[in-house]
Image 1 (tube, one colour):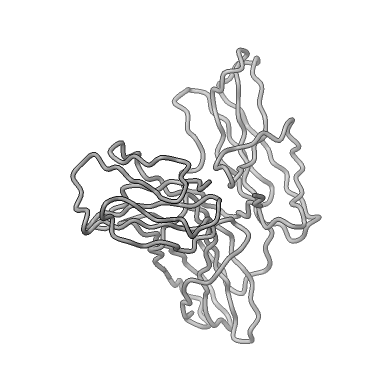
Image 2 (image 1 turned 90 degrees about the horizontal axis):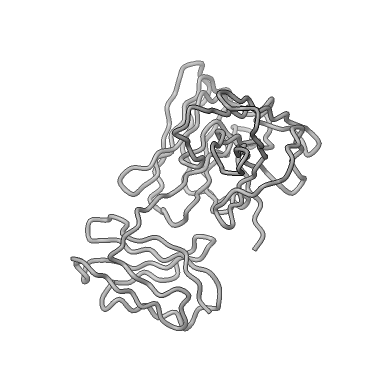
Length: 293
């Protein structure tokens, strides 16, 4: 399964590890928005508090497995491939014994065009099992609407909401949209910005990482065959709890009462799926990728 990570922006949520050490490494970029496949950005690391006996490498986020891959010795002049929209990078630092001692912040680089509005920010937050997308404009000219778009792989986006614009103004305007369909570990968002003449361009991309605490009371055998058997060792209103099964593209395939904890998947092809369990209050109790053999 090949996925291109298509990221850009000034915001990335909960994706980069932090360190409790006094050492610090910062990663900056000369550009966060590239205009073409041959445009370039210079990535610059800055180190503080380290001894001279360290090694470091540039890493790129691998969305398919949710981990960071080493891309070898740092190439600080970076070009985005023609089939990519954007990518995320960080620096990993090791000591002389090859122990990992620090990570930098994550840098997001993306290809984008000229916007018909001026955005002061575009960000997201997770609250009450939903993602709140908010943005602010400081000027709009001949402007029609925003299309809030989401993606599970960073490449293929679809519109989830259309938000009317103020039109033409030099005043600050705040906007927001709510996405209650939290069905993947990573969810990407961007704005399609459409003017009154039908022309459009895109904002930067933000990515939200969905962290569901490990629920040790829920046990699911993985991989599965024709049935998903769920064992819950705790208090659960089984007649009100919901089991959901999604494709990796975000399409809901099963949505049923918890019942006896059995989900029939005999009609589904072999592959990977997302299983989610929600209690009667709407809290996500379980969210995990499973494999059907």
